[in-house]
Amino acid sequence: MSLMKHKINLFYSPVPEGMLFPVCPQIVTVHDILPIVFPESYPRVQYYFRYILPLILIQSKAIIAISDNTKKDIESQFDIKNKPIHVVYQGYKKSIFNTRNKDRDREILQKYYLKPFILCVGETRPYKNIRRLMEAFSRVKLPNVELAIVGKLNKLDREIVDYPRHLGIGNRVKFLGFVPDESLAALYRSAIAFAFPSLYEGFGIPLLEAMACGCPVIASHVASIPEVCGDAAEYVDPWSVESIATGIYRVATDVSLRSTLREGGLERVKLFNTHRMFEEIIGILHRYSR
Figure (spheres, rainbow, N blue to C red):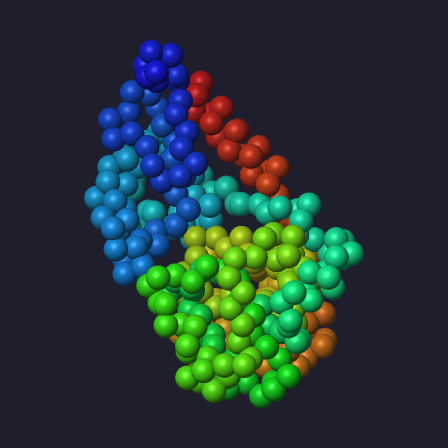
């Protein structure tokens, strides 16, 4: 069944895909330009972003970006002129990621056999900067603290699981793989801090999840990350192992700082709401469907 047959007056794509030759007005969402910034992590998709997506965006009535940083990336990378780009922030699963649901946290944590730990969440693609994080962690004198890494192991860096042993901290780094949301919330609530040293992010939903669970955040000062965290994070230079190590040590050893970050995060996360996100998108669609 075609759009023309049913006389659709607007097509909306929540992903960076759309019609090259639109039969009706279209609005496309762009989350990030990762395949262009880190083409080695997206060897095939990079060509779509370089050669096809720009044509789709030119043919679109408007564009939705998930952060102001992504909007700037779209404008600079694709040379988009005189095209409305609306920024709509993302939300998170408030019913799961919060400070309330602590009843089963201890039971959930027992299966991971964790000591006091720093948490990191994200697939181990190179731009997630996990290797520098582990090197930084190896330099911090916190012998009774572990580093717990949640996320799928990426095939581009299969050897990453051996890197802690190379650094001499093989018994202090745990790769937990995929963790369901309920268990992940328990990890956020129980961690000393959440480390997010990414080299680039279009937004960073794990940041919202951590703040919503009252977990102090250590994060990169690049891309959209400061836009998400505001003043509620201990910022580090993701290219500097020493800076990451200093950030980890400061937060792990300073109770007052952790309390400040926790309170700031709980306040900051109130700005991000899934219901508001949908309302804003619907408002944009109504505006262009008239």
